[in-house]
Image 1 (cartoon, rainbow, N blue to C red):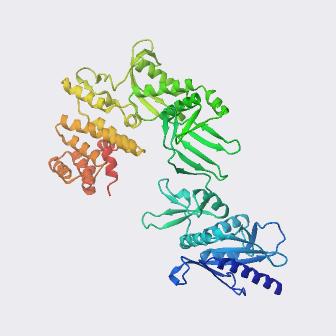
Image 2 (cartoon, one colour):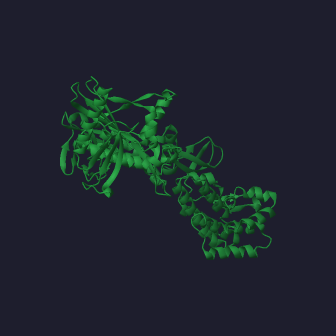
Image 3 (tube, rainbow, N blue to C red):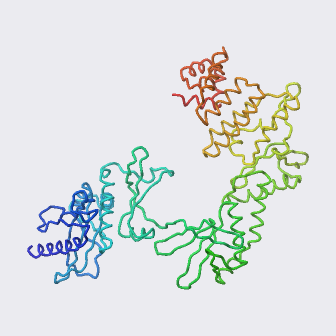
Length: 589
């Protein structure tokens, strides 16, 4: 026992001397080892002053001394019951002092154990063995040097303070956090690349900042960073192409890559003293076209400029580029791009979804709409066609003639005449009256000026037709269905444009006003003048329960809306359940 006590005392003395050499650290260790679990603490100072307010924090420590006959120490056992105590009291820093047989100092090892590191160790141990009573856990330890000592202790204090209040609460997993939330992690080091060295010896914790309280909440998950990147001021030119979006990527093995143009990666082979060049075609058509053309130019000239310095590629890299059939690739991409441009499609095509059916549909549409050729389709009547090209949805009219032959009509440039019904009961309509909400939700070749023009043409020709309310309602339904925010905004903008026309044509009829205001209510809060208009409609509509119901919903008066809803007959109620005003009604509280 006396020999063990002497060894422990020597270990504490060696560590105390090591710690106290640092002017911002003060050791307070129990040299008689009377404490049951802790062996003292280290005061971490902001400055060399001895004032209490200069103490940044106090680090509880556990000191172990060993004379193991090994070449190197990699781990050290700790009692699980001790770890449970450390976990509940802010964590601990373990120091292992390694002595020679002659009791000379060989090395000092450490392991920083903030609360969540201990929680993770105990959790993994319990998965292996349900009973942790008297169980020893092997703790991975690392060599301690003077440079890392102070930042390591400061890092422990910061993590301990962030984690202490949450150690006994139900943990939050990274899967519980939505993708649009910012998550943080902290590490110490001389530069951004030091994250890889830090995580070799420390757990990397993620913190979620609560938007209401501003408190940083530690997540249960620890992470490993496998790649980092940073913006640079580098400029790369290849022929007439210039890239200023150059990012520097770092990796755990110390290698560095330059990424630019979303498709290009460049690394430097230290052994061969050459640049390695890698190209991965973008999934998006616009970038794929640009970068394929750049790659073709790079293969032709054989060099690029980095901040004005000419850097030539090796012969193998040039051969890898020129062996590709880039002329054919560019031709195919241009065919798709030119067609979409002719169709007025502004959405970028995702080549990931460009399959055999996409190519077939592209050929049909290009032949019928661009080249104006007859197309043979398996239809014996004229109908609207919905054709998908990757992630792009095109709607066009197939005009059947004979023998399964027909012509394709671009309804946004040619605006065909349409009629509903037969004989005296028939009426002229816009072709867009036959669109359903799902058509509006998906269509990518829409020129909405043509939609309005199709209604205006009916007015200009003094033809008998109804109003545009039905189409407006369908567009708003589509907007309510849209999961993508930008798509929803686009659809509401289309609905508002048509509503502006409809108000003039209908001379501000009550139903046109209600439809107009239900569009606006989805974009912003209705103003006092608009609320007054709705109140007047409600007062003056007498027994028109549909108008009263719509006005009450937009006035956000649930009791009135309930009253007029109950006055509607069952058939009208069923019809209204598909209307966007009913969606607003169901949101009233």
